Length: 460
Image (cartoon, rainbow, N blue to C red; front, side, top):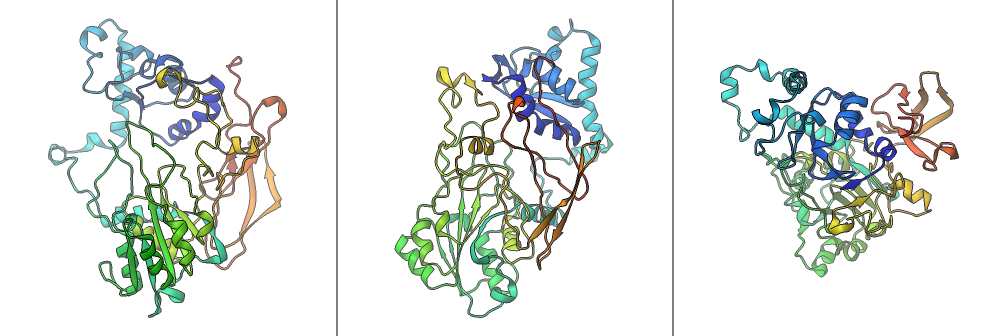
């Protein structure tokens, strides 16, 4: 059971759900675990009162596989997975027809909204999860999104970008590429959400083609590769004879279990090899927080999280400067395992991990580090650019509709985008963090503050 008080749910964990609702999401899935000792899929407080009531969700709630323990329709569940049989005629026949009708409408509306009922019988018959639906247009969108999602957390001496004119077009430029991630890339997590791409370009082949100034598939004699099984001595020899080293590092995750630790799958050699490089760039692919004990040994670090099918091209777009990185870290990267000092009661929980108490409330992530004066490896919100921006504080204005405007100017020589972050310090009586991110705009225009008050369970 995930045991968490109402205020913490509303202030810390509900905002992403609210954002999805505001964006028009059609369905949510309830999980296997209990919330405050009530099964998630039959919890009227979280499903019916909070999600559908106060947060205004108009779509349907579906159970995870095997997550139902009762019909639960009156508690807020609309549809159970096909392997369950609680929502049978016998169980539903005694329920008010208006509640059944409401669930049916909730289920049908998203299907209508996305055009499923506009398909012809032939179109429906031709659908299959095995169809290759990739198109050049979709691939290019994936490339653009992936490039825009790269976070540049370190760039000593302006190592990046390595422009085509200054580096890749020179006949004598040379590159060493290290790591299995360069030749067999991880681009997404495992489990039910995994999608097998119809084509997956690799970072190694992309670097070859870029240095050869040719199409993908071309090779350059000035690109040298060492996989995870290459000896440190051989890696050092390769590193010492090239202009730039690239370390492609990764880890992944999947449903059904937690990551055993915050390590990357194979990165112990980086601290021993990087000192032999004239310039070094690490590209980190990860589903979440990771340790980077070698961070001080490399010149530049790009974090691309789970970067998708076009990751190899997207990374190169950023490396050569065709795309100026503008993303920011959505999490804090720690120095060591459990730097936040989570207790066993909090994680994985007591009673053989059957009871996890969220007693930390808001004091996790960057809020914990500020509260306890801890220094992480990289802060939540960190991210560099190839250009410089100025925010004119004199231009800040705040009107009665909670709209905030400020003038941001690109003061550098490169095109780029920036993500201003607004943190507010609440009064001490609010019992909130020293300061907390309230908004980060996704587009140009006035910022609208959505919550300026603390949630009060007693007043709620």
